[in-house]
Length: 435
Image (tube, rainbow, N blue to C red):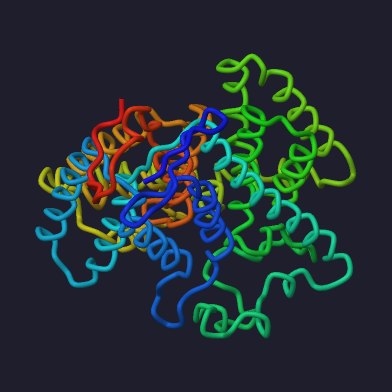
């Protein structure tokens, strides 16, 4: 094996049987591109989303080829959580639970993986994410403008463009061929204009969330004016409040943790306010939705409030054994039809309902072990956790989980200088605990 030290960054050049780390940011960008641009497509009638299939295939290749290591401390907590999940499955066993169980264990195993990285290499990963969100923002802008010429609903449909076997069955159901996600949503009731979803994202709210994450990363790390402008338009043209809540909670924190971020954060606020008060953005589409938190049939209530109502019902009716062990994988969907309000079930409640207090506690310890020592800016981690825990059912969401892995847990501590000069030979797939 040949090792080189160039520009202060350790570069390990591959020979047979050895690792290659120099292409890590490119791998990260490919993974992120898969989950951002393939999430609306499925492998025929198999029910397997194309982003899940692609992510699984790419991570498997990287792991088998020795490019990824397993962190000891993460593995211990993952096995403990896996034991609680397996116990919940066996104590409530039905065959319909198996798919959810396998997907859960597969996706969260990715959190145990890491690879040596440097600060500069990790910044390239962030740049890759920013580039992809910038593309989505440009598509969202173009999508909105194009609606003044063509039917906006046809812009985001892929009939005749994408092979039919990649489109989920839901695409062909119903008079308007709407999918099961809220992909096509008018800006206001009766409007001919629909909210921008960046064409490839499952919902406009996802576009809003990605733009908000992009703004936070840009404020903390890069501070490029053109990116602020594009992300600001992408955020507001989605006409979704979720991204705004992320910024409302996390943008003030950027100025606290990093003084250099204070002025960029202030400029972002000014930009968003300027767009909202201009004729470019219909501000009433945002202000009119404030009442949704009180309307039990509105999406605002379903996304942010319903989980607390569901938790109150569950805690009141469930027995002590059920509270401890949970009801088993994929059972929350049986709870939803029994409610008289719009219930979506956030991640935290799904975890509590399906795997109980024991599973939720072990899962929390597992995530803390994974995020410990992360290279990701703490404010971005806070935004991701808010997005993951409170804004929807993210427990089995390939998109948000993969983004969390790539940005927060995959880039491990930089290899020590003395560890780079090693002779050829197989490398253990288990890495020591990160310090």
